[in-house]
Image (spheres, rainbow over the protein chains, first blue to last red):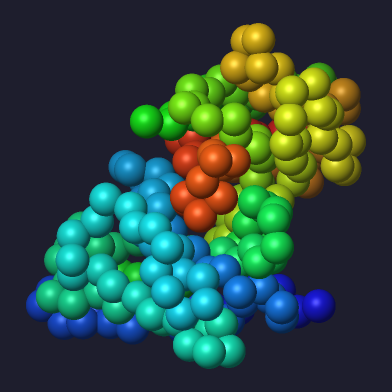
Length: 113
Length: 114
């Protein structure tokens, strides 16, 4: 099976802009989670989607939002970008039936100038 | 809330040395435990996991045992190789939640010298 894919792999934006990142889960996986990785804060959970519904959300401001489509693909949006949003954004998917093991994509490296 | 504590390093070893990376956790529920590895410029790869007390996860020569009494999940390998150089993350997932995100440690940067 193909793994989790994320696009784009690299992105450069300026402060105040917005950005949309995309994630395609492993075939058959209906749950998609997003994480932010920074040198200072490490890996932090953003949110999880299952069957197009947000199931849980981490402690991030409302500028961070997401959605999931009927084919389980997910997008994450960050509005009004700040310098501190520069990070590696990782998407992970897991099987819908039991199984708490998450499988990660390669990430999108976002740089905010 | 849940938390994971691990040595941050860098940890520098010679090839064929024995490796231990300590990981301890606190959790309100009964978590599943994981080790992930991240190579430069890449995402996270699942290395091994354990879902209940006394379970031993193993993969590629790495092992870790779920110790509920000491709330630990230490990663070990008997003989490391240069190719093992990477950042290793210990993580937990609260079984009661399932929908909760993974809680990660800060990561341990491992450097293996030839």
